[in-house]
Image (tube, rainbow, N blue to C red; front, side, top):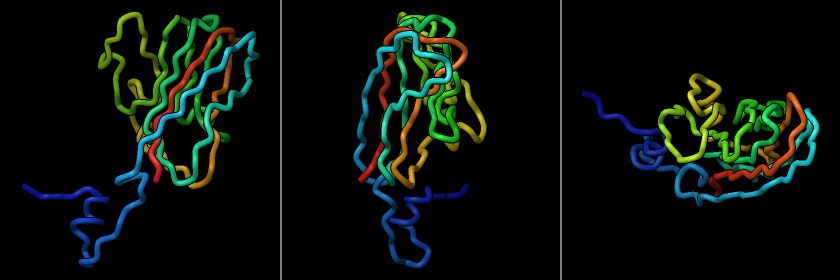
Length: 168
């Protein structure tokens, strides 16, 4: 049986050269912060962009939760960054009141039971592979906007989101 250490644990407590180094604060000892915002969509056209949050440089993303009214049953929302608009949550039809779209890596829809709520398929829900792994704990090297991109049809209704990240 082997004894192994996590990468940051090794840097601090088991350095190979005997000199401990401190990992970035966003990874060890950083403070969790939350961004909450909302948008009241009124016939928001397909292909529109909602600027959801401005992530600070050197922050790490841990979770995104999007909740909405029934936005018309046909329009979808993907959450990502410029150049990768579905990096965190794949395009999801928000077609029922209280429907959630989430970035929770490797979580299956069957892992969550919430009354009157449907958990739907963002990258994390039922997701596997490199896309999910790369999105969880995503590190922002520069100040970056997280954006929501609409598709398929126009949307009307309230859209709310919460983003959890660490920094300093």
